[in-house]
Length: 238
Image (cartoon, rainbow, N blue to C red):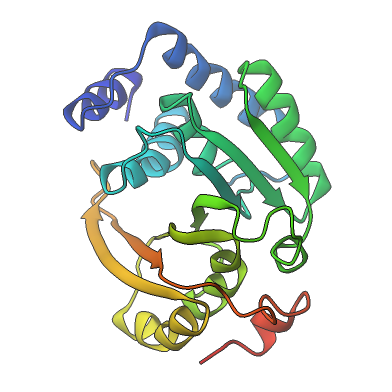
């Protein structure tokens, strides 16, 4: 996906990018490749692939959830900033917080945010399990996103405690089997969530499967969740 295709395909979805926003994506790409030589941020470094598989793919969350309001968003395990930073570029009014367990990635994100002149972007070096028990962040976000971090039963425990009641958890997955959703259903309900929709689409050009799972927070998460670091992965709620 070249830059012109990226711009026109977003316009088809009602997302128009200014020259400044297009330059932000270009700077993002350059810094991603530059820092990737020093630390492992992504296996995808070809420009057209980054625009398709990282930038466009991240923004696809906005095809199903309205980001036009000034939401507070938390991105769990964002790695090199996906999906929250491409969303922040497209919707500058949103406030983003990224939590990641690797301090080197946080250093990259802080440098990136300064280079892109992002305002209201916050970065936290922490495990999602301890972050979700922090009173400052627990049930504090309108939207929580996670992109291909873990299976749904685990991901729900890392993310739903951060979502405000009546807020939204967006799980972005490459191929999400019905079986994974079935095993994750108990965890979602236990943690106060309700599946509102599973949206399937094909990533343009390469036609690879993508799934955007939208979960509404219908009641508060019980205080015991999330459990200690590592426990959700070892003993998922199933």
